[in-house]
Image (tube, rainbow, N blue to C red; front, side, top):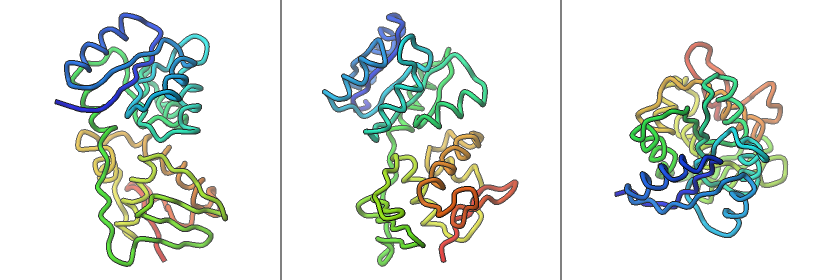
Length: 229
């Protein structure tokens, strides 16, 4: 049986009922909210491990709700949507989602995505590598804190795990598939757009000039390479 507290946010009562029943049967504690505004209030008042967030809601839409959640919380977020275009996926990930599932979906698929989003990489830190210092950037792997340009920069859990994997494998090209499977899980490998969004976010946070990256370098047709001086 699984454990964890999940908030289901969807304006359709039937979807909330089905998800609540299915997730409760798997051992999760489940709450639900009808609107983005209700979701933000619930998150302020209670602790959740993951949010299942419908992208297309009246009022405060899913993207705006996601951005508001991500502004103050590192909670795992999976976006649910009827659209399957790459543009929609990138919009969801850009707003701060960890993953993206298209309706209609099978329950085994959704449960696998939930397990992947709740999965956290163990922090295996080599002696002497607790703190990484780059030009204008200090990364503390023990405390998961990043200081960039003189101030602390918040990273989402997935952003930090991706950065942590890069640091553990410096100065070598890392294929897209290996990055995806290491950070998201073994069921991933083809979702290159995930990496584009997350690497872009990391560049904005740690690079002196994100448009001319010095540390997170693209390896054409292969993946990425983390340049550690």
